[in-house]
Length: 152
Ligand code: 4NP
Image 1 (cartoon, protein in one colour):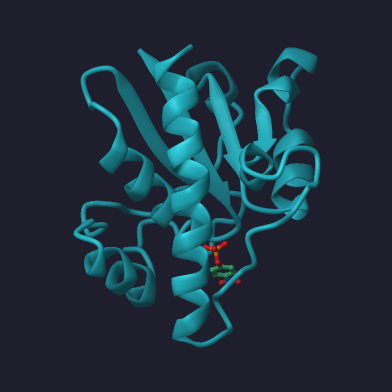
Image 2 (cartoon, rainbow, N blue to C red):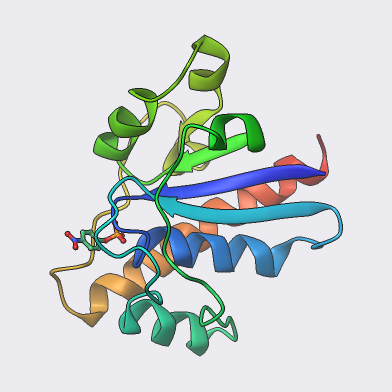
């Protein structure tokens, strides 16, 4: 079973959306999708209300998710680790035990804009529009990831 981890800072805004969107596109008996944050401030909490609301608009339920911290063990457990921005990339790679672990980590928008190193903006301090934009970016990236995974 291929295992995919989505990572952001708080694990309440961007990565829960990415988890929910990718899960909605893949068969759960073939792919395992989870998310985590590089910071622990929100551990145990539900996703941000605004992420829950935008996902719900598209028929995706995020209320079964709870925030958790990214752990070194995640390098063993997951085949692909998608991060939202450069800061997440640095924070995750800092914990990597070896180069094989680092090779699992990718900026998620590089799936649709190869080598551009674009970031999914953190919508936490912005308005609700930010969440729609983030949803659309993540949906495009996850569609590409789905096609890649199903043809791997
Ligand atoms: P996320 O957004 O990384 O997309 O979950 C954030 C949520 C909370 C905080 C930062 C970013 N915070 O500083 O509490």
